[in-house]
Image (cartoon, rainbow, N blue to C red; front, side, top):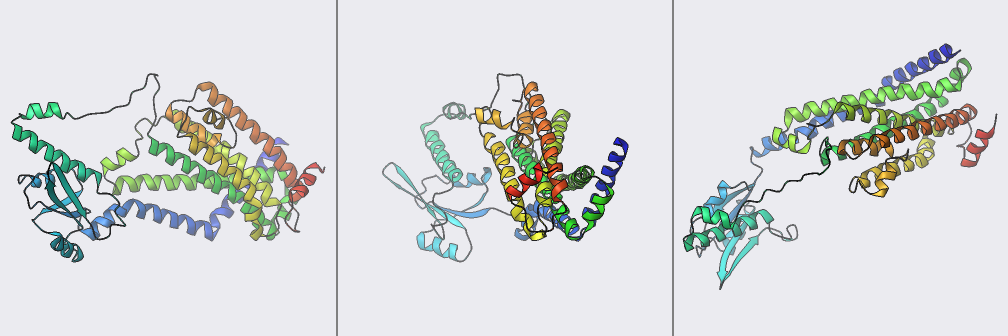
Length: 411
């Protein structure tokens, strides 16, 4: 009997996989997302081609009183992302240059008593509330160094007065941190969309098959348990493969189009461990399974595809609450709320992989969270199969919560 149930479940799973892959909407959406991923990572090169490789704004610096002792040109040797031009010009000259597109902005230098005035001139002050901080710091530092040199201090004495500060973060606990904040946030968002959209496909698939009367054939040839589990597994496999395709495409595109320095600073995967990969995959599967079963219930309670969105709203709200619990606790991962979110079954699929990556999750927390999630999935599966069995052949109006409860109590 168990062999027949397994065979029926796998038969439904294969049918669901073929049905999902053969859908024109699925193929088109997959291709569009892949194209957008490639284009997104290629944007810096596209901008470079259109701008001739120069992203920087051109800033004119006018120092008619020679307050900087002809040393302003040293700004072009700094790491500021600007192209500097140096010319003694008054406000009207600068205005004409900006209007003609010769420059993007200008700095007019003047001095009154012991105050150095830096007037930052732009086309529209409403779009620039303050001068660029890096530019102001560079001009201030340059002026200070000029004045110190006039006193007669050596380069060594100047460096002692204005040393370079290097800040670093160290931890007292011997725990390995597997990644940076960007990776953690990206993983949280990726898990949410993967679980949400894959689970949503289960609801959509059930409703579409009800309208095409395929469900009547399935119900007469196999058990509701095999149908709901088979559909959940089948759609989940296709969804997981789709997500892997997106991730692989994104990784290849990032390495092909992004500057290696930018890529390494944004996405540091040097400490991404095998254990973390296993934990992430495990929580994805369990999280998807739990939410997919809930969506299967909502899909079986409607008779028309246009009612799916309304029926799925309560489950979607629960999914959003779980995601935002994980997202906001990321800002304070040691808080009591973060500890609770790591154990709650609605948020642990999004939260626990992040805690493991950050090195703050204890072994017992992972085990307890997994047990709670598995137990919740089993309970949801029992409820879902019971409601699904009695509601799947409902071709009337969308069932209310009262109808669903009554259906669950029926034998």
